[in-house]
Length: 152
Image 1 (tube, rainbow, N blue to C red):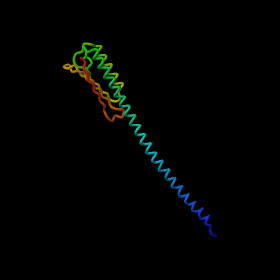
Image 2 (spheres, rainbow, N blue to C red):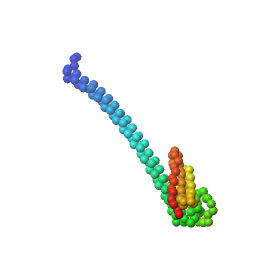
Image 3 (tube, helix red, strand yellow):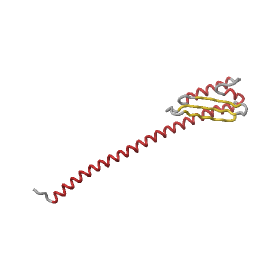
C-alpha cells in the first residue's frame, strides 16, 4: 500500500511538529534558568542594601549618642574633666560623673556587638574627642566613630 502525497505531507508535518515541541521545551528551560539567575542576583543586591541601611542607621545612632554627650559637656563646661572615659583626674561633680556613667551604659545597650567608648579632653586647647567603636551584626568589620568639638 502506497501512501498518497497528502499522507506523506501530513506525516512529515507531524514529525516536524514533534521536533518543534522539543525545541520549545528547551527554549522554556533556558528562559527559566536565565530568570533564576536574575532572581538570585536581585536577592543578593537586596541583602546588601539591607546591610548598608543597617550600617548607616547604627552610624547615625552613634553620632546622636556622641552629640548628646558633647552637648552636655558644652552646657556644663566647668566640669568638662568629669565627662572623660575612662575617668581621668579629679572630678568635683558627682552629678557629671553619674551622667557620664549613664551615657556609657546607654551606648553599650544601644550599639551591637563589642562596644568601646572613649572620651578624652585636651585641657590645653579645650577640645574633647568622643570615640565609639562597635562590631557589625555580621562581626565582619569593626566600626569606629570619632567626633571632636571645642568645649571651652
